[in-house]
Amino acid sequence: MTYPRIDLEGATIAITGAARGIGLATAKAFIEAGAYVALGDLDEALAVQAAADLGDHAMGHALDVTDKSSYAAFLDATAQWRGLPLDVLVNNAGVMPNGAFLEQSDRIDQLTMDVNVYGVIHGMRLALPGMVERGYGHVVNVASLAGKFPLQGLAVYNASKFAVVGLTAATRLEMEGTGVSVSTVLPSAVRTELSSGIDLGFLPTVDPEDIAAAVVRTVKTRAGETSVPGYVGVLANAHGLIPGPVMRAFRKVAHDDAAISRVDDDVRRVYLDRIEKQ
Ligand SMILES: NC(=O)c1ccc[n+]([C@@H]2O[C@H](COP(=O)([O-])OP(=O)(O)OC[C@H]3O[C@@H](n4cnc5c(N)ncnc54)[C@H](O)[C@@H]3O)[C@@H](O)[C@H]2O)c1
Image (cartoon, rainbow, N blue to C red; front, top):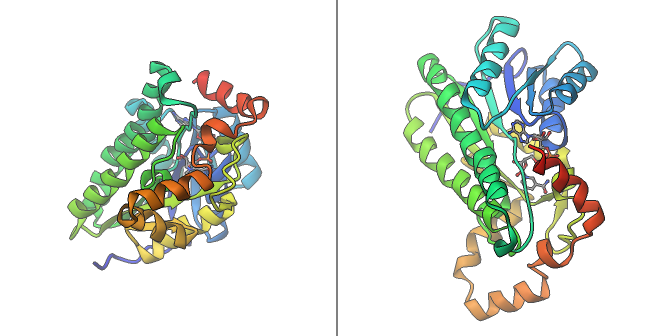
């Protein structure tokens, strides 16, 4: 599939959950490539401050991706900012509660699906029609390795990220021939607040800048799926072919229940308190 080339110099980009972590690193990477970036976040003050720190190629705005009208207001403000249409949307906002499935609250389950799944659905429903009309545009949905590989202690997060992988793959097919691409990026563990306090030592851990570089790269490659690091994607796609007993032995040695058993509760509490207030 070929797509009209997107020139990042002067392009308009919107990123959700961009006040910190991967979203903020991605905003920086796009600005370094010459683009103008609207940073949307539930933490409006942090988004506005982050944008001010980034300079005149950045704009901070309030956004709750679970609320379609809030998402629409963010995209309207992005379009009005420079009087130019959106070239690239990055659906990055996400939450990751951890703990045994039977101990999770209904409210946090709902929040996880609302932010991680409906946030992405709202964004695509709102941004894709204009892109299709223009025959030009790109959407990147930040999923996770957890969208391919089940992990104990992350069941509902797994469910939400499996959903994003399927959602992206199907919409990508529907967009064929329109000039608009939809891609997903699947990070392994990343050093941000979201994974803080969990010793996911068996997973390769990368920096937010590594994910940011991969997101920017998709504007050129338009690859359907990009895993970071790349080999993790190969393993995640192949794990279903490995015999059950071998996989179970590997999981045991690798402490695949780290999100339950290898948690520093004091460190983790800071993040969990943040998302419980959402
Ligand atoms: N950190 C990791 O290990 C890791 C690994 C794989 C995938 N991911 C994914 O990467 C994405 C970014 O994660 P991160 O590590 O940068 O997390 P983070 O917690 O550092 O940042 C996420 C940002 O999203 C914002 N946010 C949360 N709910 C929102 C809502 N309803 N509306 C708007 N903004 C909202 C938060 O305020 C925060 O600023 C998430 O989708 C996450 O699932 C992270």
